[in-house]
Image: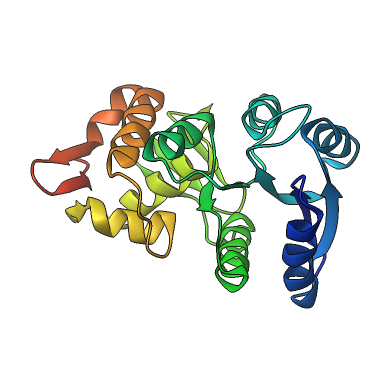
Length: 224
């Protein structure tokens, strides 16, 4: 296993706890004790890092600031770790491009499972490109084009679009979408989905109309 994970947390005990569980699974670990150090390490080894576990409350530079800077140039999967459990914080994190959000205290085994799930999804697979009336999904390259023009999607936006498309013509409830795209039992607000759908529709342009809102249910991808 050659995946590298950057753990960013100002608590050394927390870093060691997470590191021990991930090393046992064969992952290579990099560590940073504050936001500034995290950005420095990421700048030096961005091509190696496959995922970042990022604490929110840290000295020098907090997790939100680190997230904003990394998202300017990278789509690397980021899981936010925070002691806060406020719904608004979670929505804020997803707006900034967080791929997963875990509140402390958490089970290290669950954290590892989520890390594995995200890495598995981001590795891509060998399925051929699929075209849906001009929306082309390349799973191997994890890219989306609309009428030949590439569009920029965050990891979560991409996974949500792919999930909708792979379930074409099926009405999907918000709960089902949360369970399958966000993984496990996500306890946040379903408005998170609405926010992501709005962004995806905007990026798809005229093709955004293929994502239908099913009143009282959720969403459906339908090409007519």
